[in-house]
View (spheres, rainbow, N blue to C red):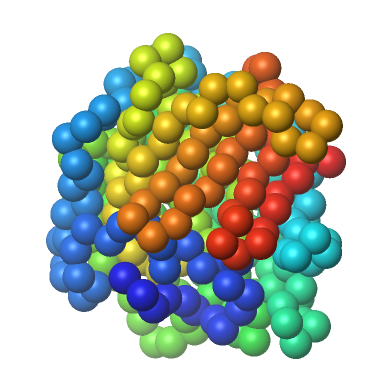
Length: 248
């Protein structure tokens, strides 16, 4: 898919819908997000780990924003919270927040988000047994609703502007199995389902630091995730967009 069904015309670094391999045309009430059959990750009980911190967002080496995030356990489930502010090309701030509730094995339960640029929008997604019931409120008389079905309840939520979701993706990856693993994906702000591949690159040297590397890819783009020994996301590079995310 070449274009973006974005809510706002903002920086290209946050337009993930342009590169996620869309599994069905926009507008279907129940598009399927079937990935290919190679290397499906297996469920891992208790795979999530608590984390908290800040990311700096760089474009062409210049800081354009940041995100504060926290992943924590609560009553047998997990909650990932992120809040991002990015300066757009016209100097205005673009803000996004997201709260994602998950099971212990990483399957999403409920997601709420908000985005503020020229206008404000908000939305939510309810996940049940591989079905995602999505809703977006654009300030009109009634919200936009759409349902999606996936081959697995362990859907990776990768929303626009929220980089802590890639931290979770690295935790969903089965490090013991290794190799290339495929994940169904939902981009809630754009109501777009799809699939991506995640592959371990082994030890990587980036500048003066050593990491464990993951390649996140579709047919159109590659994103590189760099993690420490505890598999915490420390750095994220999108070479084609000259975007880098750094943990502070």
